[in-house]
Image (cartoon, rainbow, N blue to C red; front, top):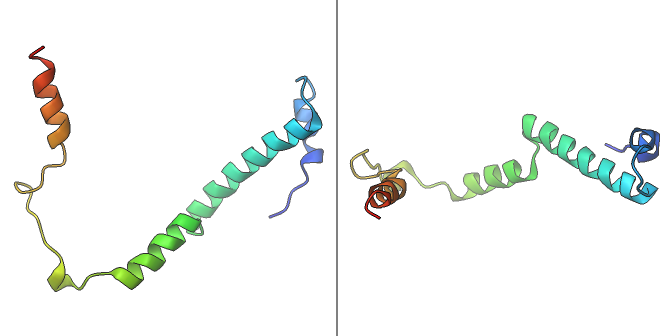
Length: 88
C-alpha cells in the first residue's frame, strides 16, 4: 500500500526536525502498522516462510519423538539459576 508522508508532516511541525526526518518517522510507523496488518492476515514474510518450510520439511509422524513432561523440562535453566541464587 502506498502512502504520501507529506500529507502527515504537519503532525510533527512543532518539532525542530527536517522534512526528511519527518518522512523517516512516518515511514517507520507505516512499516510497523503494515507489519501488524500483515501478521493479522497471515501475510507476514516470516509466517509465509515458516509455512512453506514446514510443508517441505515436515517429518512423518513415525519419525517424531514424543517426550513426556518428565523427560522434557522447560524451566530447567531458570530453576537451576534460582537454586544457586540463594547460596551466594
